Image (cartoon, rainbow, N blue to C red; front, side):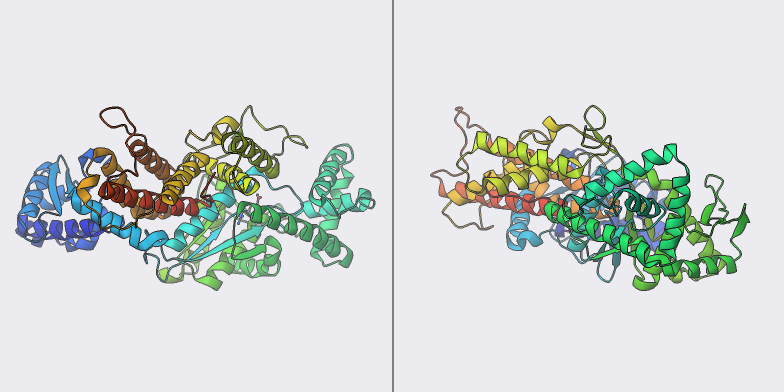
Length: 600
Ligand code: ARG
């Protein structure tokens, strides 16, 4: 939870009140820490129902410690809190079952929130929570010489957003793209290219042509299994550094890199480091040696494995009978490399849930190694490495029909989204100046937002009509609301300031907007804590809906209740709200990786 002055004061008073109301039990508890201000601040929760208060402190855990019933504790502590001197008007404590709810003075909340948003602008919600903490976030990790699939899209979009969120919170964040540029599939590609690639012109549409070669290899290998042996031999050549094999591999690689780069520019996605599995080729032996030395390896039918002390996990395969290493071997080398290079606070792997067992195995091997080596806790990465998993993307009616069977091409999706967005603009606002650019922002924004429409672990159901609906729970709806706010700001000629009369924003609709604006910093922190940008996405939908209630409200005689009117003070107060919502919407969309056009 982010600490605004209301929370700070509440935690301070709660800490004092606990000690005063339970002085003996407190002294005898032997657990002073749980009565600390900082600790209590961490415990504050958001009530499900906003009418219960701004935030709440659950006191259940104090029952046993204090030898009293939680509801009684809540009553006693809340009572004491309200008796304490100092800013008694700012927050009131209110016992409700096992909770102490906080009622915040609405006038104070209004001026405090508007002041913070308007003075901090896009920095509202920034913090130094992450100071001196290094976070590695791996995302995308698409495969060379294969199409960029929707799974990679989802990883990319989630990871890019997490990178922005962690940066906002002051973490030293490094975004890594770990390309699948090594493995037996390159043996197949080399064989396919040697056999059928001679006349293929790789100067245009190369990725597609590489894929065709790959698909052809699989088709022919079904009829002619000796192709697989040839592929193994070709991969061995590559591993041994055979110049012709290496040259082909490098060609495939540079074609794919150029393509990925184009896609990432189109999506507005950034990385700090682009690396790949091949980078770890010379780093695997050292890990294998360490594992052998620690006595963790076994030979199993000629292969080198690490049996895992977890009945649900099969042994981790390090080296096959023919000496070839595997995907897992490279990840182990990568884990060690990243730890030794960065000494990270956490290292995240944003990869689909289909690879859950793979990461469990890899992390388990590391844990066993660190245990066997008797490393002190500060030398261990165990507990710091995390698989940030996510569900599938399902297209309406099963897989979307594409050029090549059941693989979904990302660009088929974004191209269609941009085209649909353009149709919408031509229908709604044909005089718009930069139609193509805006259509791009809306189409891409719609695709990005769709990935956050549900919690990370859930599957996304991608339905065209829903994704681009300007009125639905979509990216375009948020962009549209934002553009509307910008249009109000263009129309308004007065000055925008937080020095307004808060009483003019005392209506229930305005207050809901203010509460939501005040929640933004906490939402950003919750996103980092749960590694789930869905929290920001659903928050922005609530904010836009709450603001639209103000915007669409009618006066008692049925006329529309204008934001900008002849009433100078009222207009000023409402425009302070407009600017604040626009600021938070803009920043929230930015954190998701979505652009916010000013007109659409
Ligand atoms: N390239 C892999 C794939 O597409 C994903 C890599 C995930 N990251 C990792 N460190 N294993 O399946």
